Image (cartoon, rainbow, N blue to C red):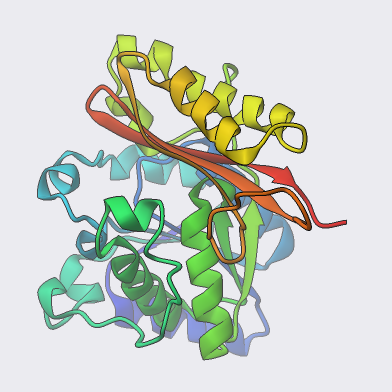
Length: 286
């Protein structure tokens, strides 16, 4: 596995590979890798000649400086995991490589989001998705992959990124890998390592709430499903921030199942001091 820290050197190498006819799959991460990330590496490796993974803790998507400070960083062990999965290239840039003029002056793509960034995560983390778009747009411009791989767990994020790709006609295919879970149902996340023992024991209730919503969907009014889910989750040390049932394309709340072709249940829960998100598809288009 090749390691690059400088944008120019990475681009020179990838341009040479492209001229040789190699295809490129790209998995952007913020490190603290787990099986969810590795499943995307395997997916890319099966479909492309080269797989590139980036590890970059992006400061522009953190609206809480303390959250940025506490985010787990373990590049050495991450690199070993990637190498064991036959990842071809690891890109670990400094902030100055991604934002040459400084993160505070970083400008992402100027495109209307039509409210996609205002609900759920957007309502609780102002500016978060503009920061996500800044870094993904910049990384795509550096790597120029054929395919971008993201995970289903960050459903609102990949919906917004898909909107950016479609609106700007970016020459990249977006592939979404399924959420990978622990045996007790907890969605794998880099933040899980920060959970206390008490919070870790309680955290699987998030997926149980989503499963309950899936069982009730179609037979129970949507507001009642939301109420039941919030009630189920609202037990210390868990503190639900939201439980929404939305259209996965618009991210707008669904209040009725009539004429509904798709629905996504999304939750954000504080588990002690750690904030966790998860989602599950309730109904797919026929």
